[in-house]
Image (cartoon, rainbow, N blue to C red; front, side, top):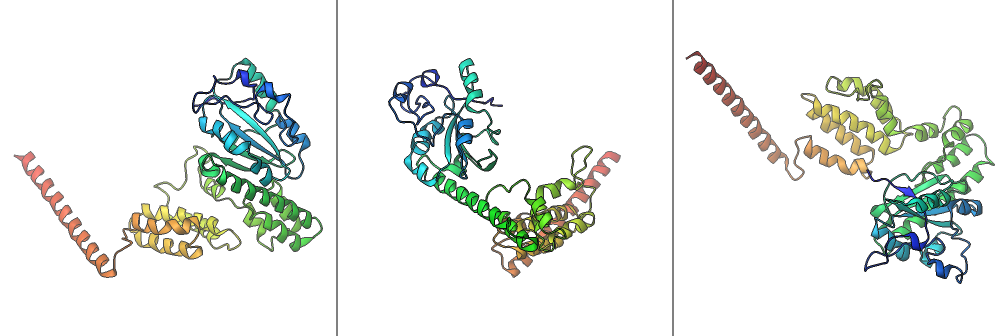
Length: 364
């Protein structure tokens, strides 16, 4: 496992001088070498340490860029192509910007410097470089953009868009919280419920605020924001050994009641309801004669939302698990199944003849 350490060090302590693609990691202020730092004006939005950034942060919070000076060349290149660009400052409003090197093999000076640069910073969720963490003014992370999928290529265009979208969602959340503070009851719950739909991490106390505003959960927003597909799955796990209760000894009937409670609760998100269907579909696949039920459940799941992640993947399950062919006509399907039955009958007859021959041979 890669051992990573958060740190920041002067240019002279970084990797060897650049050869084509491997550049020495920039220093903390504007990515400039030590000898130029005294002449360059200090950018108030680019403090040297996370704690300085947090102390100066307003509503737009702090944005952290994590890169690997001695092991990830792409992240080092993105310091210039993404992190040091003026466009980044344009799309991030008044957020504080801090670059944090992650060394694979830090020396003593780098280790000491790491404690200074990262003091007060929450752990990085993934050891992927580059990674951009977005935190509020209290230092709580509300968005994480790791690696190629979220940051795109070195041009930075994908990263700029994703950062701007997450920051816009964070600003909207702050407005909704302010609006909710002046409301009561279900009206307040409905405003808080909008926060749960934003594409950022929900506030840790959102469910508690919803319960206080709507104790009877008349809006269904408490259940909507309290439910977790993963926690639902864990609820079906054997707490003693960590294995799913839904094993080969479990029946579809045993899973049906709890799953259908989730599936029929229209207050929940469509993907959460479809995730419960997936558990039933997987169990139906295990059971003899479950093919028809499996296909019926796939069809029912797609009706909930054909455009969600689960809705788009369900047709493939019908092909892989339901013994269907996406391009077959009804007549072609009937002909294929007839042939499969005949082939199976021939196979079993052959097995019986082989066993009979084996018995006769052993007697002789």
